[in-house]
Image (cartoon, rainbow, N blue to C red; front, side, top):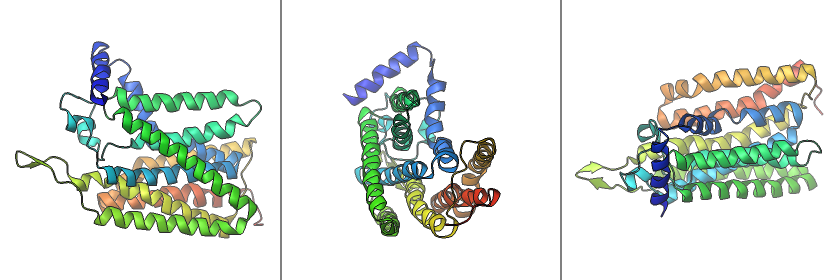
Amino acid sequence: MDISYLLFLQHIRNGLHDAGSSFFVGLSTFSVTYLFLLPAFIYWCMSKRKGLYIFASAYLCIAMSAIVKLIACVYRPWVRDPRVIPVGDSLTRATGYSLPSGHVTHATPMYGGMAKIFWAGKFTHWLSIFFIGILLLTAFSRNYLGVHTPQDVIVGIALGILALWIVECIFKEIDKQPEHENYFLLAGIVFGILNLLFVIYKPYPLDYVDGKLLVDPQLMTNDAYKDISYLIAFCAARYTERKWISFEQTGLNVKGILIGLLGLVLAALLIAVGEKACIHFLGAHWGRALYAFVIVFYIIAGYPAVIKWLFKQKKK
């Protein structure tokens, strides 16, 4: 049934001579590269708490996704059925197992989190509707491009919703007893480390076809090192910011917006060169893990320290 659906979409795509494929590729790529810049701006300039809510949900979801992916070990659609021909260079670039969709588990807590916080605003309902629409288009794109089955997408959305709910419950507890935040941060670090050990020592399927390894587990675990490290890095960076920086959002004034935009430009440059540089020095696994720490610390603690200095904020 799932393969039939992908073949149906593939038939439509071929009939349209791949019209729209570039749009869906760009939409999908944005969700795992530059999407985090939107909640970063919220965190730096609009609402520190709401930004933290989105990031905590996203990094928890991404880490959970990595573990589900490596427990299920579901092969990509074209491995299961060679009639499925994905768009572009997915055959060589898709380095993870199929279920759940990593793009969707990035997109759901971020777009969903932004939809949630803007829905509460009196004049921002339209932004919530826009973000939900983009999320649904991103999810559909993974099927349209032939890289994931409907099950992969549905599980990804479910994990995103679950992460948003879990973090909302945690935040309510922290609101009641702020001193408990350190316990939650420590739990996140321990959870991440245990998951990394699971990834390293877990046995993976070794299926051969005509004497050739069908899927290399080493390639399948590439993204897991980065995805789990996001959560560990977030917890460590949040503790660092809370204890030694304690910045306040800039506000949506001219100076605040300009400082926020400057931070986004620097973050975009870091994305462009950071991961490749880290992989060059430490290899595919730990290089990706290092990149996760670099980018998360920049967002959660590094640039906030710059904001505090520029605004001469006093630590409470």
